[in-house]
Image (cartoon, rainbow, N blue to C red; front, side, top):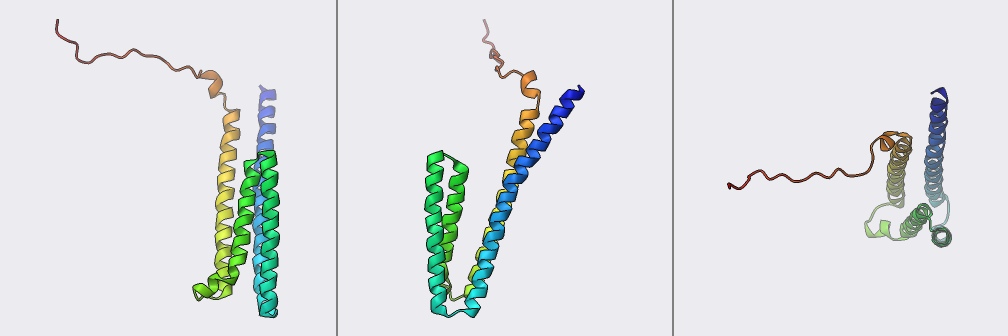
Length: 168
């Protein structure tokens, strides 16, 4: 009995470690994205606009190359999580490239566009972390549950009964 509880405690520690690892990685991503966008705002104020446009194009190009490499890795390993990260990099690179055009089309400032994009990325990662945490927690708790061992998966077959029996 005591051995079983120690085993469950070890499994729960492992669950927390796996969950915290995935959530921690996503927190690192959003921190780097936040630094990236803040860096955009700072550079925009102190650099010549032509150099700023070149900087945007270069960073978007680098993110697109990273996206292609991530997609290749995901395809080679057949890993959906890596493919999702590739999609996130693709959206980030497209968003960065659109800094040149969207503020002019909607007649808003570049800072407003960058900050609204940053808020969207933060909201996305917060929702993603919540979903990852709840899904992985549920899966690990289902593994610990003994209910599946007690209740067999065989369906119970019942014969149908007629409510109105014909009069003989």
